[in-house]
Image (cartoon, rainbow, N blue to C red; front, side, top):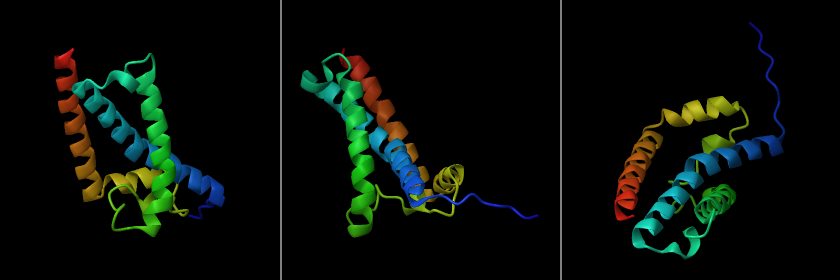
Length: 128
């Protein structure tokens, strides 16, 4: 069977990597920070209407832009946040996600994030 693969442009591949980094690394980090701010009572940023959502979006986008730039330059310091697989031009968008999910480190990261966010959500809901 001959399969003709669509060639991705470098900008399309970079965009895919940015989106995946933002969704799977930036968004959970921003959400955890917002929940921690709620628990600490720091309502200066998140107390405004839409403040929490704006904070999470902005921090996720910044992390999505910075990690792909910092990761290859400083692999020892950014090893948890940068995933080279997200920028592999030979893989489709769904293949990047599928291959990342089965890695033991990614699985541990996802479980840790879910548990931390659950704990923080219960704490934040208890404080109010």
